Image 1 (cartoon, helix red, strand yellow):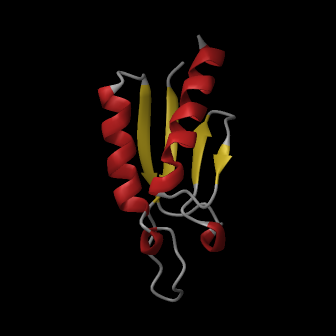
Image 2 (cartoon, one colour):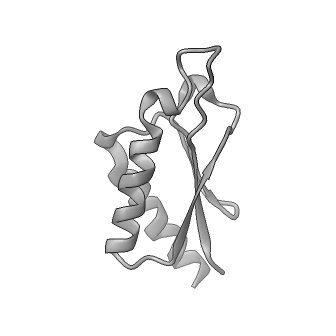
Length: 91
């Protein structure tokens, strides 16, 4: 089973705290590169909303995986570790 890392990249015009406005597009780019560089069997899916704009950027490992809120370049390694752990469970 292939894992998917869902990353909210939605930019809402009516509020100032959406995921894209907090750097989620750059985070998605960085994570895609790290996933590719490490040869992980993970698909990155850019989604439009996870309903948690105030706590964004938000990400989720699917199926049934961990949810991340408030992700930044400073804690991107936590997401990569979460992916590695999730991959062990599906092998």
